[in-house]
Length: 182
Image (cartoon, rainbow, N blue to C red):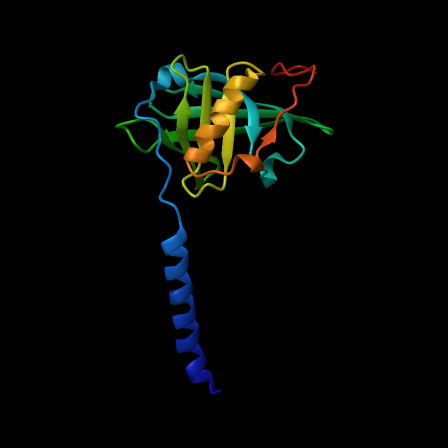
């Protein structure tokens, strides 16, 4: 087949593939209706997460958020690995001021990732955070552990949002789960 015919065939193939994918993809998950950023600030303990490359072999993961005067958020993620403690510093900015539930986070400017708050306890005692493409997901808590009944309820919510709860890696609390512990 002449080369001049391959390009149009390739374009048609990718257009058909894109239509098939578009027809079967889920719409982005709904976020919570409103987040009080000042209440959301502080330390959060990771209860479970989808596997990802940047947290391989991490345990006792925490995220600490601090609201800045300019409305952005300082993000400090910590975890323990066999090689020792690890810390990552980043910045988040709110992209949906109506709800404050959609943020963009960067640890390596100019690259930003989505951070959507999908579920939130009325007392801000737990949160489910994910991305609109459903590639990333975390269950967070103000304490290193949550009750099993709460965890099971969150698994139901996660499934309702179109995520696969079977992909979650559940954190196993370690004795040094306090942030900064040796």
